[in-house]
Length: 145
Image (cartoon, rainbow, N blue to C red; front, side, top):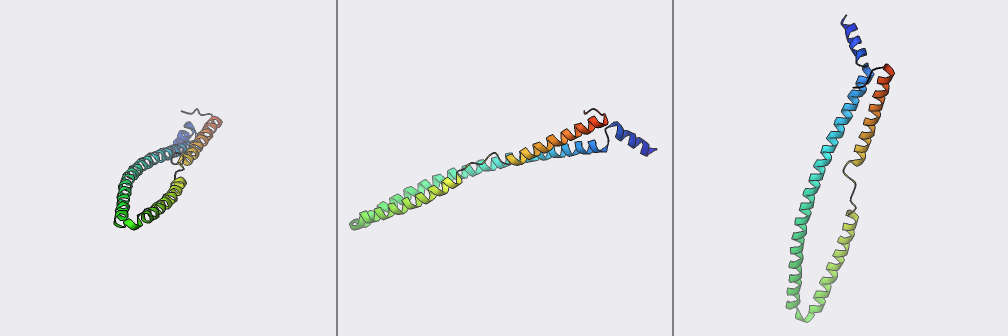
């Protein structure tokens, strides 16, 4: 008797497969929300990294000024070879600047929004699951809520 009632209840609500498809759609939507939250957390972490980068740049500026003053001091101490000291230091720092410029250029390519491809795939999965659930509901004659 209870089997008949559960069978009738399942028939009244559209059957097992539409219910499973709705459950899968709910799970995909929940997963999408979780990924969006993860992307937001990733963006916050990226902002923290930018702050650290700015602080590091300030530190490097002060280090650069200190190095310039040190080179100036060396030029004063070794007055006879001052042009050689300044030229050698300038060549070294220009070479290092070129190497760092290349590294910055390689790292500067900004990627798309975090997890954009994954979110697009989940959106497509959700769309397909909802379409399949509508087709199943139409096939069984049950209207979707």
